[in-house]
Length: 131
Image 1 (spheres, one colour):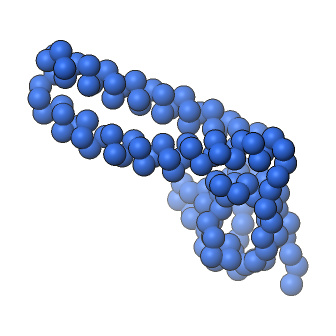
Image 2: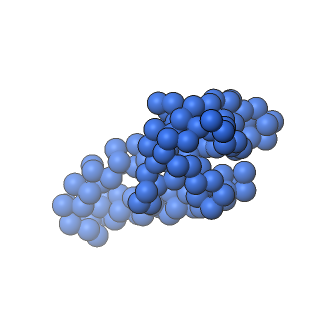
């Protein structure tokens, strides 16, 4: 769970920083300190920022109440796919989950029983099921 909370804090700081850059760009555009081509950057960045905020920040925040109360979901099945390069995600029984890359390294084809947070799919506990 420390990884979940730490990741949430780092992402929050990151998105506050990015939001401040976008807001500063809009203010500079209104005061005409930046060329009008900057509006194109704003038009592209705002939808991208909304998508990223929802996907990477809001869903983990929706899981805080479940993490504090210890309310989790359980699933078991075979690992269909793991992402090797830079991904903490993997697919088990057709659903995507997130993991702590230092404590859990699932292998494709192995069966696991997972306990996870419902909104973000972050794995809290795992157990290898022997064949």
